Amino acid sequence: MLFAALLQVTGSESMLNPAGTAAHRISTLGWIVFITFMAVSLIMWILTAWVAVRRKGSLKEHAPYNATGGEQWILAGGIIVPLVVLTCMFVLSETTMAHFPMKQKTDPPPEIVLTGHQWWWQIQYVSGPVDQHFTTANEMHIPVGQNVDIQLRTADVIHTFWVPRLHGKMDLIPGQPNMIRIRADRPGTYRGQCSEFCGDQHANMAMLVIADPPGQYAQWVADQRADAAQPTTPDTQAGEQVFLSGPCAFCHTVRGTDAAGVVAPDLTHIASRESLAADTLVNNKANLEAWITHAQSLKPGCEMPNLTEFTGLQLRQMTDYLQTLQ
Figure 1 (cartoon, rainbow, N blue to C red):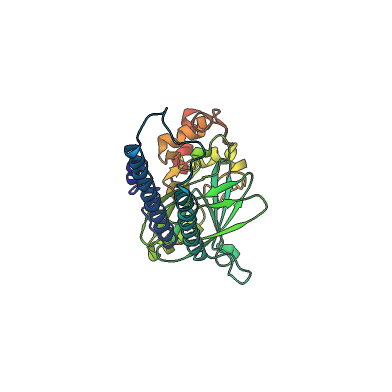
Figure 2: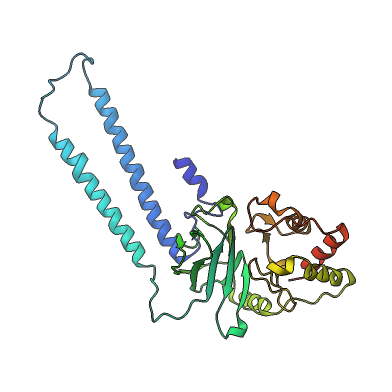
């Protein structure tokens, strides 16, 4: 167990390698609990070995069943020591939780609304005037060194938002919006995961939280608020028409076009994302073509159907167009 824990210290999803204020507190508590557990286990093994060494006689030779003595060991080891240890752990846990803010009526509205779907994440940036709001999917950008309030919702079943290096877990419960405040102390890409079983593709419901320096974040926000880039070559122009005239436009939105579907991820800037299908696939041309045509083979049970009605030329033109949507 110790070896497995040490292997996770530098992992991309390890709570023992914190990169945010809340995660630092959780990591400290985790180390205290872990070290206490190891110390108690060591003491118990030493006592067990001591008893085994001191034992005399055989199984046929033993004290009478009603022999007295040893009550002090029961009192100390069975009541006092566990009570002290568990009380200390309880106090430390409550002290840690007290540093995490709860939503108050007087708090400003959240900057981000995160909605869990089976099996992807919808991310709405809702700061400022309504005409400056925008929506993306599966990759959340935040500014380094700033608190970011996120409202958590679900469109279907219970999900759990968990980015181990930035914060603890928080549930997305039907009909009950939750709030979490995250902060990244240094730039980086932090992988998150739904940690509440939510169906067949639960394991493939991941996300990325990308912490950018403030200037870079401001530029990203400005880029995301813009409508989709207009295609400039014959192939990409043809690809746009294939996209708009096919089933894709019924489910997806591409701002600045007639595609206004609301049941699937917004694709206005899909080419700016690192991954596809909730961090299941690297975002490149080959994977994009495979996802369009054989999504059910890559992520069985997802709402994205296999779209095999496109010719090879149409598929190439459409993926060329989608890759221009930076």
